Length: 112
Image (cartoon, rainbow, N blue to C red):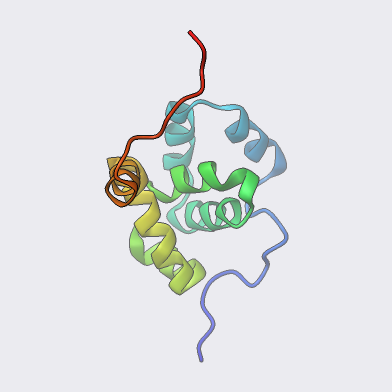
């Protein structure tokens, strides 16, 4: 079987200060900075973040800026799944899917 993508799962594909900047940034800044990265590096960073639960949201935001092919090249079948989740995340399909399966909207316990 042909292995695709990054073999180095432990090291971040971008400098630490850039990752820190993205973590502290708003979605608009993530988009602006993400677009500036080369496609392959952006896909590598998206996969790197997605594979860490505390960075998953950032990973999906970056994956939404990537092509399907670059994510698949970086992570194989997992890249395909990340691509689908990123697309669902940006279109709001994830929320409607949960409601369709559960039948009811989520309940908030916030006291007014």
